[in-house]
Length: 557
Image (cartoon, rainbow, N blue to C red):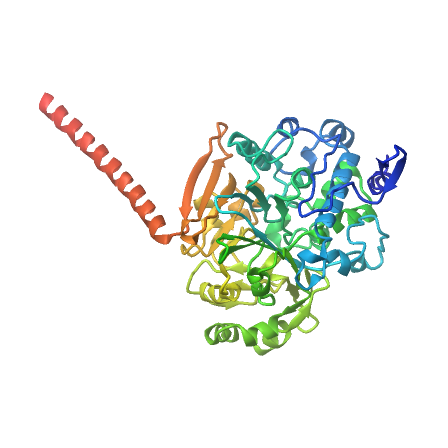
């Protein structure tokens, strides 16, 4: 069965009419209501079957040459039609969830604004690559009941072994069953992007998150990372990268060729899936009068988007098309004078004129004709300074204008989401697993085993979920952890908790560690003090026992 046939099977699913005669349906049969029904795949592996197949694959080293031969791989692990069918059906399911215009601010849905976006099989033009994609970035709002639990995953980068160990841990905790189905209605999963590239199991990660989405359309959410971009994969494939990154595993496109021998046209069709993913999800919980939100995205702050309308709406809006990134308008209208000055001081006139303007992004990043640098969507690309006193930098590196935000500027921009009905409290993101764009973030990730409270004020958290997320050679043997977090919101924000689970994969005998962070800084400090007191008590007790032993030895002599 070829690629186009497998897609056609999904486009024209056979269903049964009331009189028993078969008919052809353009989409999977899904009940159109406020909640979307799960879609089951008859050929899908169970969670434990899938875990056994993954365990049989070599985890390291991460070179494509370590994979089984293509025919053996497809027979033993995942064949091409299984993979493509799962991704295609997931695209159509997501399209169904996005089609109701009443869920959108201004009643403009992505599907109405971009007809055909869910049809991955639409014609391909290899002579005009940008023409093949429809980039209509949108924000999503997810309000959950107090006492809910949201599992958060940072960068995976093809590390399927880490992801499967995370899922098996969640199964052990009672959150997920053997059919990829979440067992509790108030349990959610949110992936922060970068499922592919660098590691050699991007296919398996992509397949796994799609299976989770298909089984739990209302409880599993996939954010778009900067690597969910065909152009980035092409850059990896051609080796057009900074020197440290050339040594760190292959492009997703090379992986697809190695496992499935996809053509360039087929690679483009598959990459169209990314256009269906939100660039930011705001998770909120609280009371009927006031909701507190955390911004969940891959990168960081975006000057061009003000979320207040989406977050403060009394209607049950879930989405907002961003359209124009109003950077100039927001700079002049919403930033306080101190924040404006910090940007002006860090920028020259050319940058101010060319970068801080209202923009419509034709793709997640594109070339600035004035400076020759890349304009990047902040939700997918921005970074943060690790030093709380640093302000702002638009420079990044020679390839991208990767904006780096400091604490005060970030606090100012988060306040845009505040109203009588809503408060935007902070950011949970991934992306910044390096020591170059804002300070020693990679070192902090290693020391914290995957979750960094960047300024220790519970405003910005960086979460990395797999060892294959290393960016620099200096970190090759540094970050060796499986890592995910459980966010537990409450009516009062100070009672929110973030529980971090981690285990060191460098050891043959692995065991999970667990630590809790309270959003109430006083409670967090009390916890730190109690831990420090316990350590001091242990140290003092050990010293006392040692002194007693020495005294006893002296008396015996």
